Every structure is written in structure tokens, then in C-alpha cells.
Image (cartoon, rainbow, N blue to C red; front, side):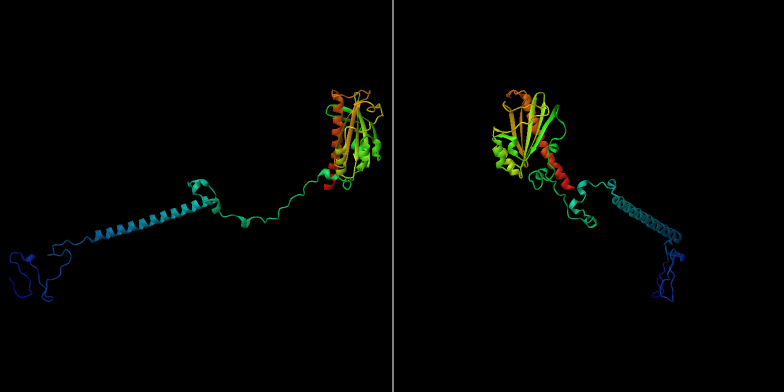
Length: 305
């Protein structure tokens, strides 16, 4: 049933409390608040909603705080790793060696290196032989006593007694057979001699002096079996190697040619079995070579000072 257009609908079957009222001025049913009578809808629990909102806000603030703390720890760890790596502690990283940069990728420190200078080298040592190969360099005093000093000579376990000495500028007078001509032809300027003896065996060493090494070398090449130095006796050494067969040697070093003649002091001939004579001759030839070489060494040392 209706009591006019736009009026409230009246349901005869509902109690008055359930009928919808009508707002005559608005021409519509009055608006009801949440949970108001007649709406059938329960009003929100504003206290619960406020509490839930506050809980969400607290949770959001807690998450922000925790996130900030985690970020701070991460930054601190990164800094710590950087410091450890800068200190060169290889235990801070588990990277294998193959992951490290190659040598070519590592920057060099040439910019901070000390200034370099042109390399310098010491001059080569002076050659002692140069000082005894030419009269122009071989200027040290020369005498029999400087080449053969003392009164005796020890070679290994053998002791030789020093006998007479001689020094002459007439080289031919100190030689025999074919040697005088060879010495003269090659310009011999001086001839020094000395004799040593031991147990009935004697040896005379003769040293011929030339201006150049080439002259001494020619004398060595031209000498033959008959090119011998004349033995020197006296001072307790009897005459030897004048008529008997003796053993002789010839050699040269620098501008010096040196000779030996060795034999028995009793006039006995030397044979291939006369080992004492061979040993004596070899010892004195070796000693003559050493003394000539030492002369060169002494002058080279003095020149390098």
C-alpha cells in the first residue's frame, strides 16, 4: 500500500520498528550511520583498527631499523675486505691464482723508480805478456839476481843449490855450435846465465833478450839439436857438458828465449834412462818461464795502480 508518490514503502507485515522512515524534506529515506538501527550492518571497531594501524607502523619502523643496520654491517665488511686486501693478506680472498691479474695487467712502478744511469764497465785487466813482449814496455830493471834470486831453489820436494852466474851483451860468447849465429841474426842484445846442481847433476839456464817477441819466436823456430847454451861451472860446480852427451831444451816467452843444458858433473853421458837429468832440466826450464812471466805480472800490476 502506498500513501503517495515517493513516500515510504509500508509493509503491513513488519512491525513498526522495522518500517523504513521517510525524510519528507529530502524526499528519501533518512541516511543511517554504521551499525545504526535498521541498517543490519555492524559498525567498525575503531579501536581495533587504530591498534592494527599502530602495529603496522611499529613493524615498518622495525624493518627500516634492521635494514639500516644490515646495510651498515655490509658497508663495514666491504671496507674491512678492502683494507685486508690492501695489506696483501692472501687469506682474505679464496680466489684461485688463475683469477688474479696477469703480470702484464699489473701497473709497473717505473714512474717512482730511481733514476738510471748509463752502465759503466771497468777496463779489462792488463795483460802481463804485453809488458814483456816489447822493449818499449818492458822497462823494469833486469839482472840475473832478479830473475833467479836467492842461493837455492825448491821445486816440489827437490832442492837445488845455486852456483855461478853470468851476464853479457855478447850473446854469441855464451852459446855453442849453431846457436851463436841464430842469436846474432835475430838481434840478441843480452844473455844471462845461472847454474844449479843436485846430487851430481848440474844444469845451466841461459836467457837471451831481444827487442821484440817476434825476434825471440824466430830464434826458437830456428834452433836445432846443435843449438845449445854453453854450460857455466865454478863455485863448487865442476866443468860439465863440454865433451859428454847432455840434454838441452829451447823455448821462448815474450821477448825472451830461454835454454837449458843438463848433464852429469862426472862427465858421464846422458841417456834416455837418466831420469834425474831430465827432471833437473825440466824443473829449471819451468822456473825460468815462471820468472819471466812474473816479471810481466809485476809491471802490469804497477801500471794498473
